[in-house]
Image (cartoon, rainbow, N blue to C red; front, side):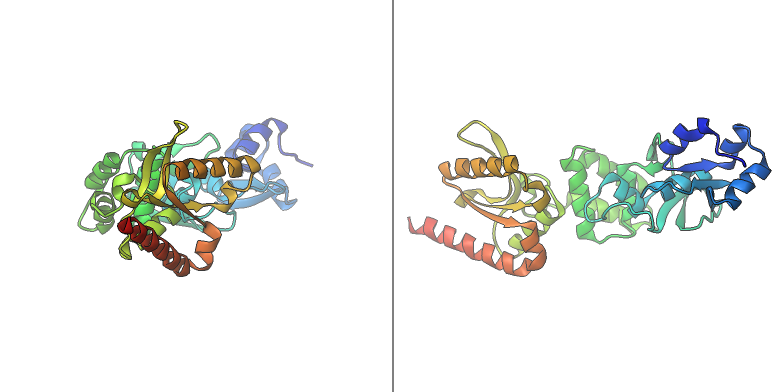
Length: 316
């Protein structure tokens, strides 16, 4: 009975369980032996001349198989965004429909993959990983996402890239200008998201999608907050406040549940809060869970708390 050559094990493991017909025959198997492995279900056909080892499982396996099956392919848009960890797109899953780009006009058909064609997919637009997966780089991914996401989602991801120092706002703007075509209104939307001088931006890019939503909602209700307001605490530590009204020393801190469960994190948050109180700041904490359950109700409470604080300041 034919067996998968053991010398291929490291390569197969690195590519999330994916192996090609060429890999197998170069390792000494005949085409008939490969067919026997498929018939015995040791190998499962994924694409033409591309297989996965039957027992292998990885959420990244479908993307690896598609890129190995068609070397000129690059995961793009929502799929690439999930690999990069973009806000609001969720995680990579094994059963999702992939989105990919291929250069030129040739039509590529791969099962489970929406293949989009591009006449200007450059080498500098893609990143080739050691596991066989090719992705569009973060800036090109953002531009391609303009076809799939609304303006708020695009703005949030653009701010994420700037906040995480993956690139500068000017890098994104220049890329959008180069990419712009009459048939690509998305390029103008990305550029506008970064150039629009909206209230609240002066403090810096929002730290999360939820923080941006809170900031926008408060500004719409007339609360003059800025994002990521810098401040030096009495102990000398430099911090940034999620949404702050410096004139009244009032701020909102959005606490993300999975970031604040450990004891050390909780202790650090309490110390930060005490330091802010020493400076005369009112800190109103909200959790991501509360915002997801009743966003409008939480915003109503924050607006009322800000009104109380500003009224007390005026009465002094």
